[in-house]
Image (cartoon, rainbow, N blue to C red):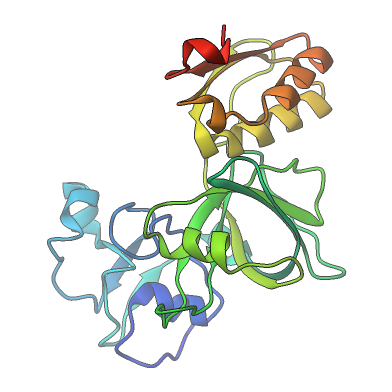
Length: 274
């Protein structure tokens, strides 16, 4: 009852809201595999679909919760949207640099539009939008964790690993060039620091491009000299997958509370890995 939207019928609720600049989190790009786009729909959504059932608890069904990526707008609807989602913004950035971290991981650095700044918590993610390319005729979006330090509020960095036949990662690895425009929305997510400093030890575990949110956390904690003891276990398969080891060793030097424990699970004897 606080905000009235007029939209064209027939689209999924997730897309209809995005067109009105209300951005609902979705890590899977609307394929009903993440469950993040859950909203309370008090009226007008119709029957719950089998694709939604795994993500909605019995008590949530009674309250009308649905997946916004699975509900088509066919009637007048009454929605409850968490207030913090109205603060999520869209940014059309410039791709300042793109470089290889490994043979299948690229690091992207985006420059926000002039005069814009972003406030995010280390560990959060953005939704990254592609453009049509090759045989792909439509725009898609996927979620990628921010790897940069929150103190740099005019840039965003990502580590994006190529997924075989992945539409979004294929776009990043084969189409994007420095200087291109990149649309992102966010920030989203609740993977960020909780708890009192000095009370708990943080055990961080990641592999491959899962380094991204951990790198952001380590950079943030070290720069702000927060009193957390940290052990970071990081694994890759082979020596050609190794990246950021030197940078993590440098953070060990800068932060006496930080310990980096890398693993190469399929190292060969001739690699000399210890």
